Image (tube, rainbow, N blue to C red; front, side, top):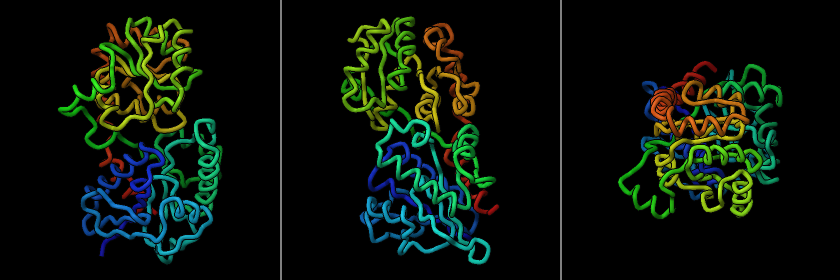
Length: 357
């Protein structure tokens, strides 16, 4: 009888992070598609869950909802889970003592970013405490901790004594990420300008991006902005020389809306160093959008030669170049680089990890 890899799919019930939810679906689908002969993929889900992944062989529905399960697992209480090979696409995992050698029980987790340690102001205090607590459990009980880039692996090794249990397996864009036939209606609903660059980053880092929009002669659309941040972003744009009316602030968007916004952009600009997987940069590359990003470890690992990586003080000049004369070249480079990432290849590496363990 072949192996059965059990995947924790908590994010499908109560979405704590939409990017993590997309990753969970993409990875689970990839695991099903790349399962070795005789092997199967099962799911472990909280009470009330549905699993929108075709090909899952068996679903173990636990007796607690997502919130209660997160609290219980943080304390090491895992009733009804059982053993075997378990992977969680996040730190939400039944991390308890187990016997890998004699019982062939394995538990691995994926840690997508280190914001809880390096940028805790971006998360709630409760989320920071939970992530830090779950990493402590992973240090004691995980057979491997998967991270998406070598830069994150290096930083994690500084934060926790995990040793050679750190593994690097990249992520990918959401499955089928692209623009559908309803793009025009979505674009109208989002009230997008005719020409613009898409910006992401903290309020303190966005000034160079706004200056880049001025230099390129286009508007700026800011995505992933915190709730209620519009006045502060508008003030920052105005201070950087971009009139308030040309700064369009958007919060968390659906996958479909993000694709529409990115697809219509002259360039995508990441003004912050990323302490994890650069979700929007990868999505932009999939769509063949010119990418400009501040040079950082994760950006160098992931974007590599698929975009322009520059010091923060050179962002504005790079944006003008990316939206102008270098646009076609950067579109080709972005598309080429995007082919390095797929959930199928990530899944194959995860199967290999559990085989090695």
